[in-house]
Amino acid sequence: MGDLLGVAVLGTGHMGADHVRRLDRVVSGARVAAVADPEAARAEEAVAGIEAVTVHTEAEALLDAPGVEAVLIASPGPVHQEALLAAFARGLPVLCEKPMVPDTAGALRVLEAEARLGRRLAQIGFMRRYDAEYRRLKALLDDGRLGRPLMLHCVHRNVSSPPDFTSAMLVDSSVSHEIDAARWLLGQELTSVSVLRPRPSPGAPQGLLDPQFVLFETSGGALVDVEVFVNCGFGYQVRCEAVCEAGSARIGDDHGPLVTAAGSAGVEVPQDYLVRFADAYDREVQTWVDATRRGRVVGPSVWDGYAASAVAEAGVRALGSGARVAVELAPRPGLYAGGGR
Image (cartoon, rainbow, N blue to C red):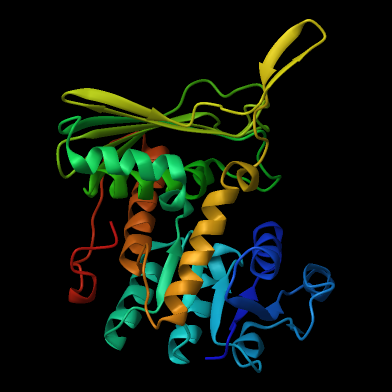
């Protein structure tokens, strides 16, 4: 490994292009060695001004490009399985954006493939674990001063949803972050899920069941509820309140600058997840680069990615049936003893 870790970035859309910028301008110890995207012009635009980068349209060519020592997968979720297995076959360390693999069967294949290697290669991109507020909440819950956690109340709001967003994606795309955050904060698995649907907001596209109210039960007897509202219209908001035996703690209140103008005062609300979680993404990628340069893999594991997909899949079934659905997990391989939580 050279002085700078040569990173290949697969996918140069909104998220991937931001990671290219991050690796080039923010993170230390790494460089962008190659990028790939089916739209070559988009890939070229993402690396404009960056020297010694090769541009590809196929994942296989990207992984085999000169100077590639690790790969950051930011392509759409349905193609993650193939990319992860190809990286494993080459022994390349991976940072894979969520969802690791959207369907449980595919996620299980990735889990089994890494377990056969006998060592971890992949970190999964659940960036909330790297957010300063989430980390403080985790520390509070772990030190026990608030007593046993009883409930988590979560809010996940977006200004608007993309044109192709479906009702199921509110659960398996948006709420997937809350699924991982709840498992990590509580140190418990989610064992069942129910989805309630109020009357859709008039701001939601025709046919989209938005908002939704998702309720999880956990292996430790706690409850987790999530209000997910992806067309709220006014901003990007993520909040979480832990209610415990001896107290509560809440994160995610808006703390932007107080602006006074035209006879009123208000706090600016972020409009995008890349703004709200900018520091978390920076910390996540820097942690991955530092660990990879030391020959280590840390952070959310393939088991965490698999568990999130299994819970989300149960949630989609609950959305369709209106019934409470149990979450079924495969046995945890020994490689992931203790989990990534």
